[in-house]
Image 1 (tube, rainbow, N blue to C red):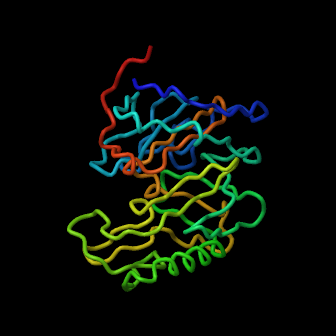
Image 2 (image 1 turned 135 degrees about the horizontal axis):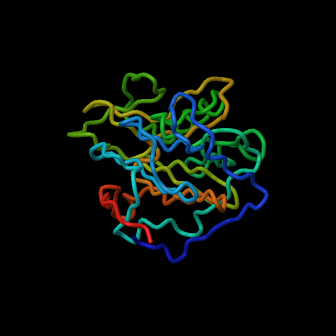
Length: 264
């Protein structure tokens, strides 16, 4: 298995221990207290619960959560600067949560209420949802920075769509990055491949949805924004690592080794 030499752990000794005796509502005997559920098969992942790595792979829907994996390219390693601690005010809730301070689009910050907005990482929701007040400001800003791209008729459930031509599922337009500003100055960069969804050969849409005026948590990051991203969840040390898009590092989740290997 490939090892990351600069793996950084940010410790949170005051965080509560994980209760592996809990079950996820609606998912039977899945005792993992986080939403590591394969969205294709609906099955629970069988892996080490104190240090989970996962990706959402767009290629063929294989069970990406089962077993232990080795990743070939060095670029898949999340750099030490990408690690941040889990927020300390989230308890008794199923899922992974991080803190987001602001959303930045082309150097303009969309400030969020309070010093930090609790954000859920979901392997069930297909697209990132934002509370209505955040969503409205984000779409307005994104519309301004993409004003040169022709608009298309809206496709539900999206609020901003573009006219473009694509021969397949790959997005052919280029849009500015969306940056999630996290704790300690960390940035999760969402590039075109994760911010835009090609709906038809002629229409692509901003892959964020309105979660409603009272949405809690205010931000839920969905699977489209995870695609071809390498994420590390270290429950023992309450640390979270991410690579941002692997496409920019000249690799993808298709290079992931799905062969089950024996753990030493």
